[in-house]
Image 1 (tube, rainbow, N blue to C red):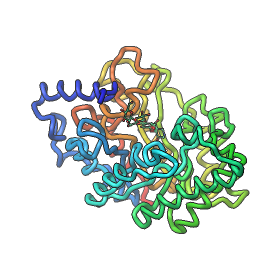
Image 2: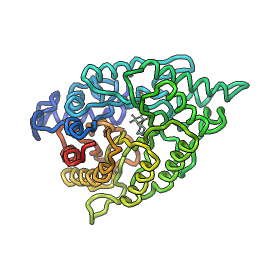
Image 3: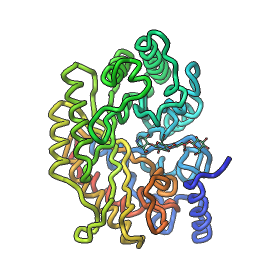
Length: 386
Ligand code: G3I
């Protein structure tokens, strides 16, 4: 199998680390001993919260539970996990009839063995490019609405039946609001008669299956300038759910925060704190809980120097968490990966113009905790109990 750019980078960084420390297999490193590093979940738990991360089921050189170094980070810091890819239709549904549960089941077994909860991501990622190609090309026949509803409800009931009692929170729908605030359209939404009909049915089906689970709408609208229309579209969708009586419990705020422009006066990047608080106020006023579901920091515009960059990333995250933790409705914080080398951001364009790897996660490529880890720990320590 050909190596992806991310895997290649991880391999190079791993070799460099082995050369430097001779201790690649252990997460114990030059910065601190394992026992000296705060467990983020332990700190979160003391406040009635949970901390967690995405994990994969890939090979031992990726952000997988099979990677012993990565698994050590998860065991130290996480009380809850989410599969980075293995519950998506793209992975679960090779064709209209079958389900490929094996990779997700392996992750769930790892979580349960280590007393970690798991979130379900996602029962419907509603963007055409993230549907399986067979679904975008599907022939819905002479009664397209009936066939679309059958496909959707079969998927949701099969998955939720299988994991009943083991997964208590699902991203039922992911990213159906476009950045211009309109709703995404796909083959299945057109067949069923519109996006609202599709997402409403997804939540209604999930609720009928799981009366007590947390049902989440998950999206990436954020606090940087440029997100105004996306935020407005998400508020409109959430208002619509309430007006139509659709059973949605929480907004998943992905929190892929990013420094697109370097602002030397703050050492980080621009953000719209006042507008972001107003957005969050409106969400909680509609009686939605909030979660941080996919946290990382895209440092794409920061100057290259590593220690200054790590400080800026940590400061930017600290400012973000100061706002987020003000909301008692926030109880779960999940990072989208714990370690820089396996982050999806290493492949996400634009790449850094200096060609350096992004430093987006709490741990560096050699599993050393970075300033971001300490700032997250400090933020959780000062958070009010919920
Ligand atoms: O599994 C295949 C492998 O067999 C093949 O050799 C390889 C060739 O490129 O591709 C592998 O699949 C890739 C998969 O990641 C597993 O590595 C897909 O091409 C790639 O598109 C997929 O990217 C994921 C992306 O979602 C799309 O599903 C990223 O890892 C994942 O981090 C990203 O996560 C999303 C959240 O689900 C939703 N919010 C945004 C977030 C970041 O984009």
